[in-house]
Amino acid sequence: MTNLEIISKIIFTFRKNSHSPLPNLLSMQKEIFNRLNRIDHLIRIKGTGTPSELAEKIGMSERSMYEYIKLMKDFGCPVSYSRSRKSYYYQEDGSFTIRFVSE
Image 1 (cartoon, one colour):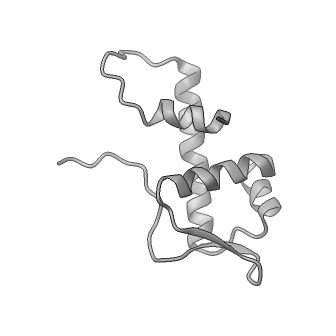
Image 2 (cartoon, one colour):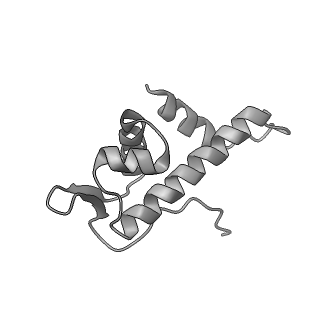
């Protein structure tokens, strides 16, 4: 299991008895959300460029970028890469959103 997968499990796990998250964990969560939002935006505008270009735009290693793309796919995001366009794209219209939805 990669560090990103471990962190994502921590983030998406509801902890009923947690009253004050660790400051650095909260900071890591915000950074992950920010990166996912930036990746999603670049995918929607088909402006990611090659995997190495996307990693550079987001400010991470190419290996970490692949982990973020895998994480998005694990959450059902239909993301693919076009070699001819040299960009990631969604196979259907939509966006990757992390938010609270009241029932």
